[in-house]
Image (cartoon, rainbow, N blue to C red; front, side):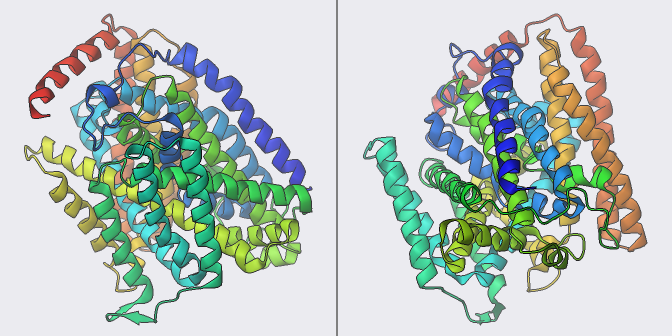
Length: 572
C-alpha cells in the first residue's frame, strides 16, 4: 500500500473523532459548563493553579503526555504488521484516548483539581486509593527513570541534537516572560519562539556537540542522566508559567511543524509501505499479537499516564470548562497523529522488505531508531533536506517531548509523594517531596551500574502498568457519570476492553518472568496484578452503589470547594 493512502485515511478518522465524537462527549456526557468556576481561578496561587490560555495549556498537556512513548510503542508494534498497529491507533484515539483524557480532566476540575489518586479515595474507597497510589508511584518511577535513559542515549548518539535540546530551555524562559510579563500577543510569541527553536536545530546540525566518553569519572550517558534529573527537579518546583507552560507550548508547535514536515514529505514522495500488513513471519520469541499489541501501543491509543497529567497539572490551569474539550480530547488527537506518523516512518522509510526485516530482527527492535532512520529517509526524499538535518529534526523532536514528559512526571511524582505523606500524617514540603521523587528515580537508574541501565530495569512492566492505570481512571469516570444519572457506556466499553487485555498480558508476563527467573519483575508484576484486581473489585462495588445514589454530587463538590477556598484564603 502507498503510505499517502494510509496517512489520509488515518488523519481523516482521527480528526472526525474530534469534530464529531468529542462534541457529543462534551455536551451530552460531561455537560461542560462555563458558568462553573474552575480550580485554576478558585485556588489561583501563581505556582500550580494558574488560569491559562487554552492554546498554551494544550501545548503543555499535549507535549507532557506525548513524550517518546507514541513513537516507541508504534515503532515496535509494527513487527506484527502495519494494519493491527494502524487500527489500534486510529480507533483507540477516537473512542478510547480522547474519552479517557477528557474524562480525567473533567473529573479533576469537578473535584478541586485533585489528582486521580485522590479521587479514587472519594469514589472507590480508602483501600482502593492506597493501592491506586502504589500503581501511580510505580508508573511515574518507570517513566522518569526510563525517559532519562532514552534522552541521554539520544544525546550521545545524535550530537547534533545537543544544542537545540538545551537551547530550547532559554527559548522557553523568554517565551514565558514575553507572555506573562511583557504581555506580547500569542501569535507574535509563537512565531518568534518557533523561529528561534528551528534556528537552534539548524545550528545544532552544523555544530554537533559530543561529550568525551567519560566525564568526571562517569560514562557520557550517565553524566547526561544526572544533568537531566537535576534540571527536572528544579523545573518541577518552579511556577508553571515560568518554564513548564512555555516550554511545552513551543514544543507543541514544533511537533506539529515536524509532523507537517513528515506528512508533507509523504504527500510529495508517496513512498510505498514495504512492511507487510499482517506479518506472518515474526522473529522467534515474538509474543502473540493479542494481548501484547494493546499494551505495546499505549500512548497513541490510550494511556493511563494521560489521566495523571490531566488531573495532576492540566486541571489546575484550565481557564473555563469548555476548554477541556480542546485541551483533553485534541491533546489525544495530536498524540494519535504522532503515533500514525511513527507507523508510517517505521514501515515506509525503508528501501526494501529485506531492509525492514533486518531492522526488525527481534521483538523490541526498531523503536526510536526506526522512526528517526525511516522518517529521515522520507523527509530527505520528499523535501530534499539532507539526511543529517532530517535526522536532527526528528531526534530533537523525540528528545524534547521525552524531556517535557519527564518534567511533568517529576512534578507529578512530587504530588504523589506529598499525597502519600498526607496519608501517613506527614506534611511534606515541595522541596523535600521533590528530593524524594528524584532520589528514588536516580537510585533505580543507577541501581544496576553507572551506565544507567537500571533505568530500563522495570520498563517491561510499563505497558501493562500504564494500561491498568487507564482502566482505573475510566472506572472513576464511570462512577461519576452513574452518580449523575448519565450513561457510563462511553467509559465502560473502553474500561472493560483495556482491563481484560491488560490483565491477560500481566498473566503472560508472569510466565515470562518466571521462565527467565527474573524475580524482581515477577514480584512487581504480582504486586501490580493484585493491586489492580483489588481496585477493580472495589470499583465494581462502587459502580453498583452509584446507580442508587440519590444525592447531588456536583452540589456536594461545590460546597467542598467553597470550604477549601475559605480555608486557603488566610494563607494567600
